Image (cartoon, rainbow, N blue to C red; front, side, top):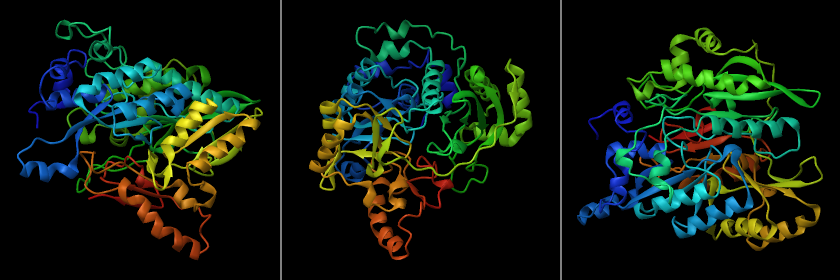
Length: 488
């Protein structure tokens, strides 16, 4: 473990560069602890196959090092070309699968060190980025998955894109390191000023999500900032903001705990981005940088109080605020199956077990989705429940869409219990270095045993929320589920 704290590593990083460039071109099998921390900002985690650790150690071999690369996809919205880029990359550079994340992004697993630059460059060439998908910055901004043709849904996606742009780090280190043709001598580069983040960025990661009532599919109360619109005469007049949600904790450490967000205020539409910037700046200045386990916004608000926090934000915000608008939430599920968009076209939500897009005996998900993108040229949305929705489907495309799912044996959500449709698990073993137990690899088997019991009790249509994580960090948001499994 490094002798330097993460704050010291950021301080010495020269705009998140560290010695990443030198290691990329060296014979080293993996990066140092200091560069491991900086790699997160660039959208990648250094991992190893934990199933092979004991065997390789006995054989005197190094760990089976590889990398997870995460794409930052505002609102989970992908063109057909962007989807196909990820599919091709999974085949060329990854482990032939893609993982939909609980923040509406894609993760590639099994990327080797020598392919890191190519992987990240492909994402950038497709009009997306990995920059800020991880690290102590504002992560991928989530939006409502349903592509309904309403003012609220359209505006929520627009805001997720605006915020992604506003909170993108300014350091050119990302381009120096990863983008072919734009690299310079990274050792001589001086870091650019970060107008929002400052030299040390945020104390910890920061998450933002937007939902459109009555469907809270992004769990806004688990976000550092959660938002929902107020619509007047079919126009979005403004947004209500809630703050201080977060689920990470540590077993046995009572000073760490999951927390749901508190109501902050309502602001007019024109002031939403400025309000988010003010909130992030308060956390930047007052978040706990002495203890990373106590560094999230939820602890800043818990320690100082929501009234103090509201005053501090308003002091930086030149805008009118009001109490949050009343809201009613009906569900946290995705719109699976066929739905009308409201503009004469349709969308179809497909259940993806634990978000793992690959071909198995249970269904050729990857082949099906690739064909849909190639043959029907349909855009898609990745959901926070790790499913996928294809949209802008014309009436005459529906038979071809159905035929592809049938030919690839993709299970239909209509035959599933409501609990299976909404449940999900984190990645955990064998790649996540934090996992204390299994999660993704055992969750479907668990549901195979739960489903018959639910049907026997007449509860197959009851939206029972079951979630599982391999450690207490809670990536699959277990702490607000009806039944949760947390590794220990």
